[in-house]
Image (cartoon, rainbow, N blue to C red; front, side, top):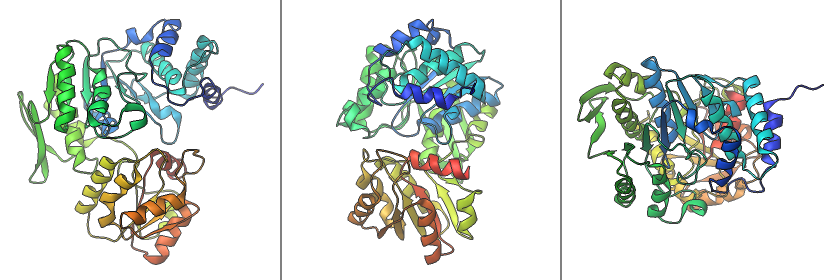
Length: 424
């Protein structure tokens, strides 16, 4: 008899609902009830929403908590190379046997009812967390907040909202205020909310939601401040000032993400030296990650090879800011995107910093934007652009033109995941 694998159970789960995304909590409540409501038995929860920076902020909070000796559960999405990345149980990625067993248990408890892939796998994560002792649980919102499958914890220890911008309009609304309203849906009664840098329109919505729930807010620019200073990072709140190294995650935007993480850690009573670990030890793949091994690195020769999974206009701006700070070197982009994204908005900030873009379709992804459309969009914002049938072919063409190039593979977490599976 062939042994069951997590991939086999996950494949069955994909068929349980005709839509990949269908925002409602009704199916979650039904299955969680059948599983004994594990969401009520979690270690203290820090719930994190936002458009950009959720994963990086979570990684920094986890690094700080673990440096302080705490055991931490962490849930994130999407995964890059393997599904197991989504579920970290008491510090370790969930094992294959444990993942297979808990997925199968959730599949059986669901009894064939409609439920999305993200919902049922979120139930599996919550069940795994409830059964393993830990000190904290970090839950990253999948999409939005108010109706996201993670929004089933009634009394978290803390909520965090990272910068909100325009993305996923087909699900969350066309305006910044509508999207901010969905993100602010994680705010709970009398639970402190850490708020990262926001545009005024988004902050107004978040503050109004917090007021309705009598939830204290600790907002960037009001209750805490963070910024670079003399090659280091300075954080300040009512508890005092922290003079820290710059985050090991690259980019000016990671300073504000670090600020939100530090504000959360201070609220949880974590000591200053462990706060430093939050910014120096955090790891988060496919965020301006330098690739150092694998077949692509082997063919890149003396070229630099970088990877980033950001995919919306704010991510494009953040990457552009990083490129400005890097040592001068001709930069080329290998880009593949989903057809649901604002590709012009993403590429426009990058146009001034790249010699050329080579467009690819994302392998195995039904929603990929065809390479020729990506190339056309790049030309529309002033980038020279060509197409290639694969990332490897794109890299080969760039190296032939400029053996000392800086090459950034970018545009989608799905593209980044494929690269890491082969070059991780």
